[in-house]
Image (cartoon, rainbow, N blue to C red):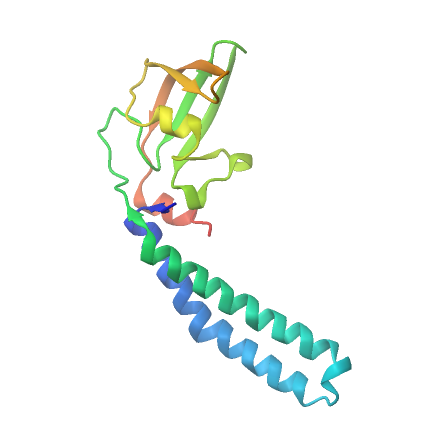
Length: 167
């Protein structure tokens, strides 16, 4: 499946790749050289740990590069009165008589523990494009769904989005 990323997500990923190639890679190679100089490699824990860190960095670079190659670019702009990517939405769960606040984000940034709901999740898909006051049906599985009411939508500025980037 292709990742859905905004242009700002792509820029942040490119920055991480560059940082990993120019800074982390250099540090990892230096750590491997230093550990290798300590002698017998078969029993050298520092050498094995340094190699593992180097390989982990290279794997992360490859993962991010593959993600960028196959990514689908989506816009984070939406009408002023409707739910879109990077908006904070307050929803009322009638069944439970509770209100929750979610930030709608791309799938790579989704983190339900922090209230960041992916556009790929059932609730994220269902809320996109709706307006304040809309009753939205969220189908979780073939056997279960529920209704929520959108109470408010708060647009997030680009500067605020930059502060919460987590990859």
